[in-house]
Length: 67
Length: 391
Length: 143
Image (tube, rainbow over all chains, first blue to last red; front, top):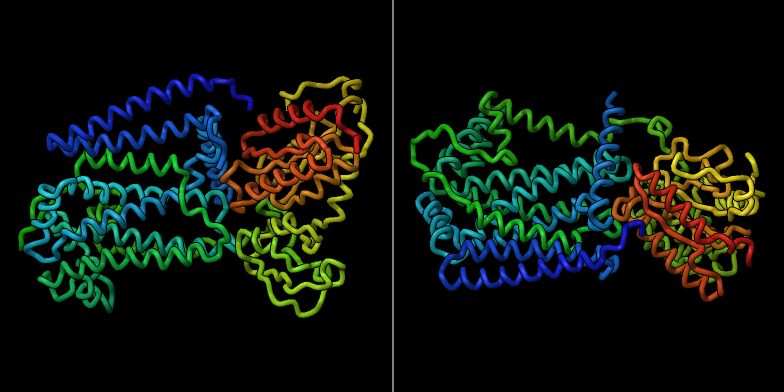
């Protein structure tokens, strides 16, 4: 309520993280293809963490409501 | 003194919350979901554990090789092993946070002793299952842990030798030992669910799952850890060898770290003493509500004439302290005349929070020392009073 | 306390009367209330302390509005931190229901509010109350 409106900024960061997440999908494919499975599973981890941050950012940008 | 220490710990806990709430939305604060996080990690442990179980061979010759096969040759086997390994650590961190938070914020007293006691059992069983997990790899570390444990068990008076025998599945380490260890790992893990039932049974809507953010984050963190620091075994166990040093996992194996300075028997005694203290904590603090700075408003009382048997209080009571029984006689008010059910408060579970009073639209529940009519008077006084100008 | 601006007697007159319920476990209460149950520095805001925010009957909030208060609020602990686990979630739901009921009765639903503040958030609580008072100014006394 008393937070200054920074919704646009949050969404921009979220968009950037989504692009990073897409890069992680690329890494997953690369790791599986060239048998570097630790790279692939690490990319899965980074992807999940990025998604978590995006969920928080959406919430802070008031795009999603409580519950 | 002790009381003051706990009060400042409570204050610090809530201060930490304030900081987290500045950054995250309130309902994403992970410290409000330590129980749910524990359950999340337990679920991850069970799922990854089943996958590992499919490859594990509980025999003296085959155990180490089967774990190595899982790690080296099974696609993503090393990841699942790592996830199982790090989820165990995260699980322990989460349940310890859960324990300390609920201790420091006074959430273990009176009607909640059943949660506290079952929690202590959960802690012990979880710790034990975590410890036996280290034995299953059957490398040098497992061997050392086994010999230390046998030493500790043997030093128990009267039943020591038998305990050691039960632990090893025979008089010494033999081919029956690893199946026994496997059971001692999986069996307690299943016991956890029985204990969880006890943990939840008195709660109306237990928060057993964290918000989606923390599910994503925790799972992601486990994947990252399992990939960046793959779980490894030590050298294979050699019959007759006596390894000295190894990298210990402090979380699960702290009694064994102690064993460097203490005789194993004393380390065991210390663990038993700590757990025993934990179990009596809710019963040792016999302070009056005034000493605790809490208002004692008395346990909720049903005004039987007005109860309509609508069950609203029954659904809202967070402690399952209200039961609906078949109404023995009709109520007096018009709404209550044809009731089928009557609310009954179970005294031993009521914490005097008054949530049922807020739920009741029929004035059929009261806290004895904060009556509805008194509150109404105060509301009217507050709403009507002329502004005390110039005061 | 220091954050709340002093009001002149004239402003005091114009200040709308507000009745609030404050959970014992939420904001630290030492020095918060004066002897007549009003907030120190805001004598037009009466605060009734309750054992848990879930104790409050929605009917009491309605009663406050009917008796001439311009607004009524409940303050519980931060969401997720209720000592009784769910008191504040339940209360938030009840206030949502009450708001719907009020708008059906052509009463401004903004006249009731729910806050959630922890032990150390007194300043934020007082700021929120002051904002709430500003919001409901002028609707007092109406039926």
